[in-house]
Length: 457
Ligand SMILES: Cc1cc2nc3c(=O)[nH]c(=O)nc-3n(C[C@H](O)[C@H](O)[C@H](O)COP(=O)(O)OP(=O)(O)OC[C@H]3O[C@@H](n4cnc5c(N)ncnc54)[C@H](O)[C@@H]3O)c2cc1C
Ligand SMILES: NC(=O)c1ccc[n+]([C@@H]2O[C@H](COP(=O)([O-])OP(=O)(O)OC[C@H]3O[C@@H](n4cnc5c(N)ncnc54)[C@H](O)[C@@H]3O)[C@@H](O)[C@H]2O)c1
Image (tube, rainbow, N blue to C red; front, side, top):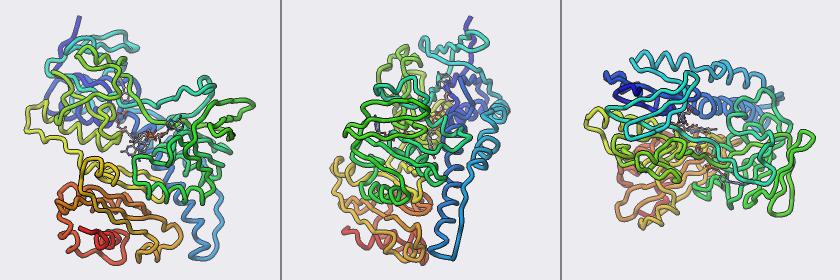
């Protein structure tokens, strides 16, 4: 017998939790289905624990800069406080009781298990309590998130490789780490483990790190990582993997090999749409993502939010979309999603912070592009900062409209500097208005003024 409810939310990632709470709080009868932990990847295996690791690693790097700036320092890294903090503060030992209580306080009901759309308006949940069938009167919200992609490399399957979930839970520092994939996941972990003393190699098959970002940003980061002793290999694929005697050995396309104690696979994310049963509502189960309109509608009575929509795999995307989907379901005047000023920060040191279009993407969209790029060490604050001042500010402008359509900041706390540029792109602030502002001296964000001066708009 199917149980009738108003809403079924499948997956309680950051967006699912937010949408389910909003809808239950508005008085709807909401069932939320979660197969692992309420809160999703971000608090237990991703954003929060990794940023705690980054914070710890950055403190080591800063201490190592003392000899350049302030005398002597001796740093003896210890992984124990990091592992303890991740276990006790970030994840409460991977326990979601507090999140469950928070959700249930809104009036919603949590059902543990794996949800699947089995007919229009119907979700079947398989869990430890058996099989339950729900009919959703008002709608189904899909927030299944994403799983690590494991590439089909000869020998990889069956080895004890790490994904982000294992790396976050590491209680001991490996002596060496091989990182497959030079995207945000690979780079944040690579720098953390290297700063704690592991010998780290990154193997990235495309011609540069952080492929979707500006090449200038990738170049700075590559140089910084190499300067810290990380073996960065771009344009390199892996032919085969061996794991013997407790060590991994990767044979690379170039004929060379790299070896290490641990292997982190950080080659992107995927969602199994067939397992989610989206074919039952007419969606393509073999697609990489669920296409949604500007109000997150994926099909009649189905909304999708988060990584599964392919609009930027970030927690802020998921929560932004949940707000819109919940408003639409409640029949409120929902804003239409607008991704022009999508921000992203990779929390390496320096941080790589981006908003809007890169130069390459703006050109591909036919924008009349003008760019300017200012190196941080040549700006007053960068020069003062000295050790650890690698970075730049790059602006991408639309000359016809005389506004910024994109920007990249590579800087210490570059994500904070990005705030001003995100406003500029989002609100289409005229370049002349930006030039007329007063930028506090000598801040990192004042480098924006120098970049604006160099912009031919
Ligand atoms: C290492 C790492 C670091 C990251 N750092 C950042 C960062 O600093 N900032 C940032 O913005 N983003 C970061 N991200 C991305 C961020 O974690 C995700 O974009 C974010 O979690 C949003 O995902 P989501 O809402 O789509 O769902 P997820 O967080 O992936 O959660 C989906 C939930 O749905 C559940 N689920 C899936 N299928 C079913 C089903 N059929 N039935 C029931 N339950 C199901 C899963 O168990 C999971 O709990 C990071 C990602 C990684 C891997
Ligand atoms: N700070 C943040 O906001 C943050 C941090 C981590 C992750 N994330 C999100 O999570 C998503 C996933 O991150 P990711 O780094 O896993 O994926 P990604 O897709 O961004 O990067 C994966 C990289 O692996 C490379 N690659 C793929 N197959 C390979 C192979 N066989 N050999 C060598 N290299 C290979 C790709 O060329 C790519 O550069 C990101 O898109 C991002 O949105 C965000």
